[in-house]
Length: 342
Image 1 (spheres, helix red, strand yellow):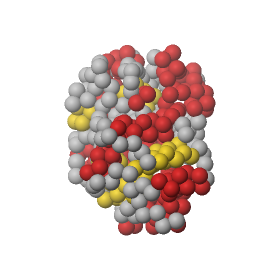
Image 2 (spheres, helix red, strand yellow; image 1 turned 180 degrees about the horizontal axis):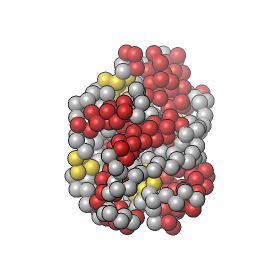
Image 3 (cartoon, one colour; image 1 turned 90 degrees about the vertical axis):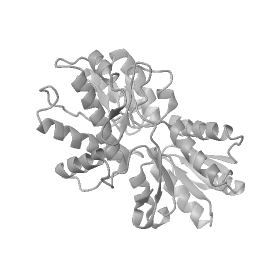
């Protein structure tokens, strides 16, 4: 279940692509403990109300065993009551919101780093460069507020606060009010916590007004989608990443990802489908540990035994007291031709 339409559609589609590529490879080898994996997808359009209906349909109609690869914070929060009632494990949510991590929910397993991790890395980088005048542009929903909280938390630790806060509605690309607030504050940098279309619209408008500050985004923006939306305007935009490079086959897990994507007929590699691939790998390992006759309870128990488990260059660690699998964060910059520079 993810967004396959709406402002986060590319994220849902690419998460699904990465997961399907890995499941196909597993099924070709006989599945898990003799059982083939079937991926059932439902579109929630990145709308919480639709998430509720889609999740109920997955439970009641599709009779799914577990949920993987959901996209978004507001949608993730809408999913919680259904997960609690049906006691369904959820693996690899495409969100870093703290509200889905604290307090610990035994059914939720996070494969990626949190927004606290990402925004801490961004603010640390800016302060190391001596750039302390930071504005925040954020979406007016649970995702945007989670990212804002992360930036404010990181800046407070350093005795500073954002010089400007500018907002945008989830489905809007109207940047007039937000841009005026940002330009008036004359920040050194703008941290964006929104969808790729609104982030791209703000960057283009700011460039047209000769704004010279740098733009930073967290991984949820969808790096490739943002780069494609910006075109030549993207050079110099920084994005935090929570997975290794999908382009450089420097680790076993990156090489296997590329091999599985190629075998599935996918020629394009990207960060989001790589995250889907990693989430699928974690789920499959949990299923292997769940035994020959898995139940939802044995899947949860199996996942909780994955202590410092290496996927071949990406380490995931769960326990009964922590379901935050990774804290890896790197920074990338969009370079010439839309290429990502580390």
